[in-house]
Length: 284
Image 1 (spheres, rainbow, N blue to C red):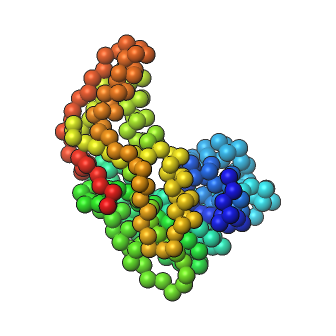
Image 2 (cartoon, rainbow, N blue to C red):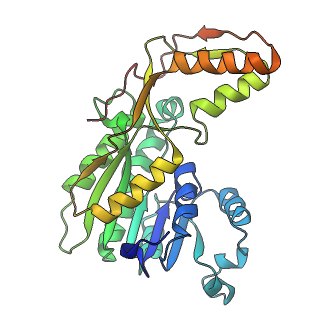
Image 3 (cartoon, helix red, strand yellow):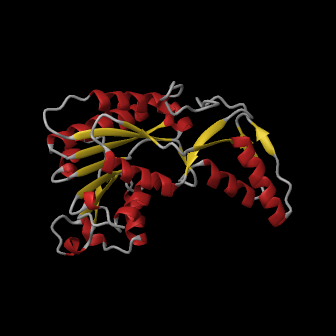
């Protein structure tokens, strides 16, 4: 995969061990970029990703000769730490900011932690990027910022506003890409439902009316790279071809599929849970 606008560029991905981040790494490693830096506070996630990519852990050492052989560099750290943000953005051309707390019920129960990561962490990494004269900064946001109802959506909404309104004295281009749910990503609804059905358990759905926008990991990675190519600063990119479906229809289809495999009669249980989830998401 040759993208001339990435040629000899050093790219930093925050949250690089998550589903979107690691998918991006696999995509970018095939391009002609110079270096891919992965920042994550998940030590084991960094280790597992290095194994999957078949890379030496010596690449963790900034002074290692082995590191020069590797296109991918691993950085353990947290976007809540401004000093660490300055260290990892030094001599970087492009920052893809994917690090976030994304699980709505967990952030709802731990709102201060959501604020620290989603808002304050975004402030830190953006300030550090601009101070280090990064060429392009792309913030990965969510459809949950629109008419935000839950803490996760509100903290990402605050981050979006800060990114768009950020005043800078240099030429760093700053833009946003807004996603729906990435199907099959870690902790998302599809692998959760499949795991339940494989263990012959019923599926829990909050409400019949609940719908979600979805995209594949391949679409997500492509959209991010395309947005970096197109961005001139201050845009919000939204994928036009993002599909929307009812969660209950997904659950019904999976139950029918697994019935054909193991003849187990599972059912859907409606929980009416109040975790801050919206019935319908909006993209703008």
